[in-house]
Image 1 (cartoon, rainbow over the protein chains, first blue to last red):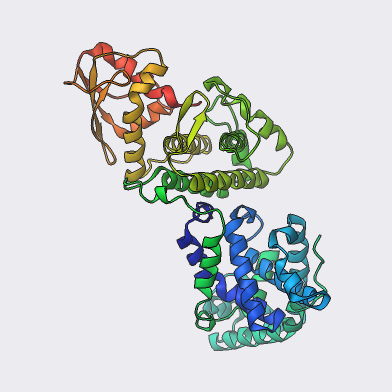
Image 2 (cartoon, chains in turn green, blue; image 1 turned 180 degrees about the vertical axis):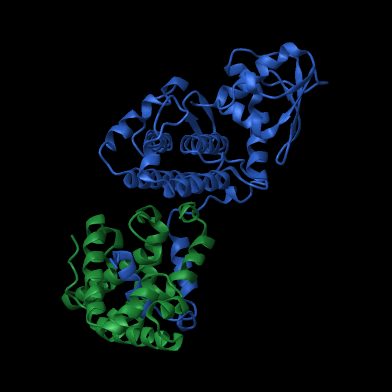
Amino acid sequence: MARLAAGEPDALSEAYRQYAGLVLGLSRRVLRDETLAEDVTQEVFLFLWQHPERFDGSRGSLRSWLGLLAHRRAVDRVRSESRRTARDARSEPMDSITSDVDDYLHANWLSGRVRDAIDKLPSEQRQAIVLAYFGDRTYRQVAVELALPEGTVKSRVRLALRRLDALLRSDLSDQEAPAWT
Amino acid sequence: MDLTTDQLLRVAFDIAAAEPSDLPEGLEARVLARARASTPMRHPAWSDDGAPLGSLDAFIQTAVELADLLDHLGPTDWERTTRVDDVSVRGVIEHLVGVERYVLGQLGRRTPLDAPRRADHWPVTNAAALDLTNQPNAVVAQRWWSEVLAVIAACAELGPEQGISYHHLAGSLRGMLVVRTFELWTHGDDIRHGVGLPLSLLDDARLALMAGELMRVLPLGLELSGCPQPGRTARLNLRGAGGGSFDVTLAAGETVGPPDITLTAEVIDLCRLAANRLARADFDVTVEGDESLLEPILVGAAAFAAD
């Protein structure tokens, strides 16, 4: 962040290489349009370049912050596209539509959807993914804890992620996300 | 298991993320081109500094280390008393929020604050501390980080030769950032001392930068302290990584002559003395030559410490 603030393009390249997959992937899901998704990706990284001070590490990871920025901007772009011409939407500066309150509302809304999706998983899949994914345990450790073969744990985690993918596919592009303040 | 918002978002984002191989060719170049076309950009002169480590990079590195230190403090650590006049760890960071705001004012990025004297250094930051009353420690840390990023951005953009006044000192941004590196390092050590962590020994590059700058401005330090020694020269042999041998005049604007006094000491000790964190009586130094010059040199070396 400090290197970004110091205007080092290498720092932006580094951030791009680390997070572009996330930003573009999310934008694609919401927009289903490659050109618009690339546009949003550029806006997100430009925002990071111009406002690194807006990232608050005490609230979460940089990855989550960039993901939220991408998701919010993409959802907004869908709304804007339906309300007015794309040209108008593109001209809206990103920093005029982001605030701490927006960040908080949006993160809560989106994480609530994820929580709901996890709750809908079959219990054995939920147990495996919570332990392996959020409990920072290796597959081997989860297998010992659940008294299961390691292969079964891997399979349950894979199935859980696939199921979550299906459950979240519509949510990630849901236009009922909180409106900008 | 209670899942945090960040953990929940992580799974959604992992599922949605595109593979690196799936990124369109040329998108990175377009992102960088848009960034380059916008402000702020790093002033090109920072890259032509010539030194192994420039003062902007030294300041950034020291700020990042302080931010890392704050990240690892527990709630009780924030209330611990430091060696700075019984100020708490939290008080030190509130003070630094104010310092960054003062600097931003001096750089034309905020309303300037009137604090031309060395003695104004702490009082000018009281308003920032007041602003942060009742805020959680994490907010205080984040506020300092935001302000220091703004300072970094402004300095990067304005370039090393930009003039600036920092209380009683006037000079270039290059020099001011060395003073600020001293300050962040010193306050980091104040906090480490307060919470029982080992003090930072700094790395060779920053020690060399700080010692070199200290030697360059030492004649001015003697002038500022009212104890210049016209026509006299000192040789300082600074031991340890980042040290070296320096011949320095003991009054401003003079040419070095044969040394009247030779001091030999550890470079880190001299830096701590210059930062007012090592008493002159505790400074381990070997002296050869005119011993009457020792006191003015040590007083002059500490002339740049703000607190």
